[in-house]
Length: 63
Image (cartoon, rainbow, N blue to C red):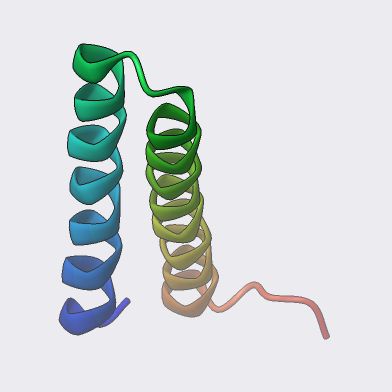
């Protein structure tokens, strides 16, 4: 897992949290949905990168 991808994914997650909260405060459902999408997408990308890293380190990937 590269540092730049980790930072990019965490930034997307934080952007999503901020956007979602802004939508909640302004009662704008479109902003809430967009924020939730960004947050979940960033978290999912982080999980995929962690899984890739785990398989690379252990060397027991599919053959």
